[in-house]
Structure formats: C-alpha cells, structure tokens
Length: 333
Image (cartoon, rainbow, N blue to C red; front, side, top):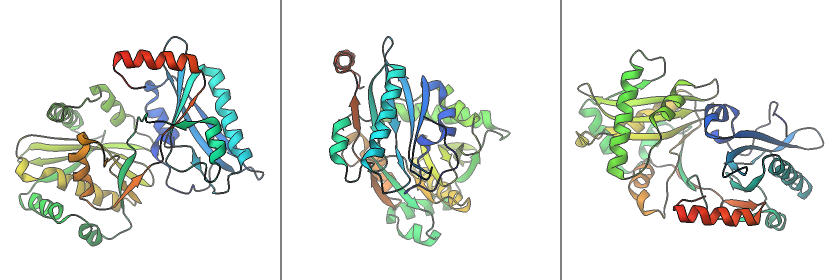
C-alpha cells in the first residue's frame, strides 16, 4: 500500500470518492484509510483503490471501496488482480475486517470472472445509488436545452420570466452564515416533506468550510423578492460538477425555482471548464426515488448503470452474527 504519484489518465473520470482530498474532507466519518497501487513492469500504476475502514462492533471493522478500484488500462492480468486481493488481505489482517464491500464504477475484472468469483460475490447491499444521470458539458448550451424534456425548458423560461435570481455562495461569501442557516432549514423542510433522513448540520458545514485545492463545495441558491426558494449543495472536482444535495421551500412552488437553479449550476460548470455534470443518483426501480429521478432525467443526458456491488467475506462466523444483529436492529450492513 503506497501513496500515488502522478497518474496516467484512467479509462473514465475518477469519481470523487477515490480522491485523497475527499478522504481528508470526510475523515471524521471513518476509522482509517489505506491506498492500494498495483503497478506494471514499467512502474506505472494500473489499478488503484482508496480503501475506507469503518468501525463495526468490538474490535472488528468493515473495508469499503466506493466507486473503485480505478483502472488505468484495459490490459489487467490475473496475476495483477491477485496482487490487488493480496493487498486487500493485508488490510483485512491489519484492521480485523469482517468483510470488504466494493461498489465499482468500472468493470474491474473484464474477462477474469473466474478469479473474481474466487474472492468475492454479488450482493444486494449498497451504500451508493447504482444509477446516475450525467450531462456532457462539451455540448453547446443550445444542444443541452434541446436535449431536455420540453416541460423542463418551459419551467426554466418561466422562472427567468418571473425574475427568480440565482447566486453561488462560497465559504468566503459575506453572508455565508445567513445562507447556510437557510439552506439547512430548507433541508429539514424538504426531508420532512419527502420522509427521508438528512445529515447533522455540522456535516454540511464541514463540507462547505473545508474545501481543498482539488475539491470545492458550495451552495447555489434561488431567490425571489429576498426569499430563498431553493438551495443546492454542489461539489466541484477538476473535471466534473456533482449535485450533492438539494432543498426547496413549499412556498411559491409555481415559480419553478429548482429547474432554474439546476440549469444555472450546469451553465456555471460549463463556463468553469468541467467535462461532466453528475446528478449523483437516480433509480429506475426504487419507488421512493420516482419523483427525484424523473426531475433529474428530464434535463437530458445519459443514465449510467454501475456494476453490481461485490462483497468479500473474510470472517464468516462474525459476519453471520453481525448480520443477525443488524437484522434485529432493522438496519442494513
């Protein structure tokens, strides 16, 4: 396990979960972090994984690889994949891990499925959505509009006509505290309306106030007559912009602030030179996600299907006991 030097380009844009800046940003959430780098004979990294270690029960832990491992070539040998799993086993021994959960962004194993099955198996467990909607920001503004659902274009024009204003609020904004408090109030209102859980206020504040060189988190708000109607939290990496969280007021919903808010965030990302706008997650199967998924897909773009989650169980007895404990508590792993 070694820290990465400068890397060649992967076969896709690495998602922020596999960036060291993101790991530093959420370091309060996990126990420890390890990084695996498998190199070829020329010393170039060909497989990379950022492995998060989470405390479970007593002295045992869980290993988690979100949106990884990352491939830097399509020519991965069985020996190199085996080396990757040997590094996983070293981390397992170091932290007494019960299992490793992998939610890949790529098909890591290509034609090595037999070797894959030797180390892990499919699982229905997921911590991240297994579909997302993305926009190609190399398209012109006109093409992006044309690719939208007509209703979305109409709503954007309506919000502009009603003079809904949009502004970005960074941590250095003079009225950051005011707008942050409003954002969290709207998050609470939206969560109550949609019957879902949200993070503590301190979580959102930490993300906004501890941005780094490679990851910036900001608020974008929609206002009408000095009232905030909607607010989104966005994350920028060098290549992409990600829509992390969104909240809206129950008041003045006829002004269509959320569509205009998304559109202006997309245009700003395009001006900043981002390659991709990622709506973070959609679902074709989850009933509770129907409304938000329909909203996101109406902006056009492509739906990305991630590979199935994989789980490697390292201690079957403790894993079974832990699963029973969580089932009794009514929680997923």
